[in-house]
Image 1 (cartoon, rainbow, N blue to C red):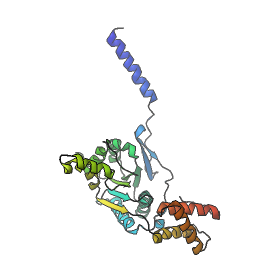
Image 2 (cartoon, helix red, strand yellow):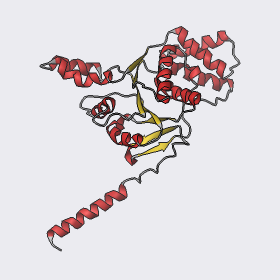
Image 3 (tube, one colour):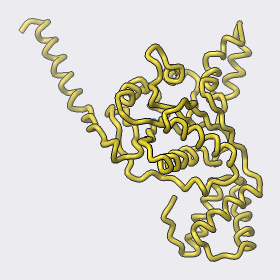
Length: 288
């Protein structure tokens, strides 16, 4: 065997070995049977989620204004009308991701539409163009959901997200809208933005490309730390919904003590308190 033939044979063996190591592609999911799917970038496919972890939208307290805006935007999209991409940003634990999942469920139930929720993990953002090609060809409408979205120094995957938000040369699929949650309004650490401004010849141009990423979301919905009244409203709503047999004064006392030990008041803290109280009271909770 000549040297070129030997090299070709080795390359063929390497390619065959890599194919054996690669996970098999996922079969096409039955989107008519699944309301939610997860994008598996490694296997270039959609994996159905049989039971989505979410709470009833009526239990989300203290965020009435942003709730109504998101539900209205979602309902328009489900009806085939123009709708905006949405960035839900702000305080941790205030129900950003819970609201996205609850709004999807509420609108889907109210309109009986073929509205699907597709979750993509933050680390798979670079594969968005591939996912868009799959969704574009499907006869459904999709909320593409990315939780806890942010970018660090040197991370260029935000360019794939910009292409989707801007539409690119082939346009964003008309049957897809993007909902993302983040603790950062500009999706970047503030010190990184300020450092680029301080060291650039043209400070405006230095940060424009990255900071403007947030501007490409048509709706910004801000979530702020809960006050005591909002926190207690959340706790009371959970207690009533699950039928806790407890006096209001005792519920308030216990809830405030729980928040003090956690050093925070938020929807997440209210839910964690509810789980603890349900365990003490022997209540089985069907949601969570």
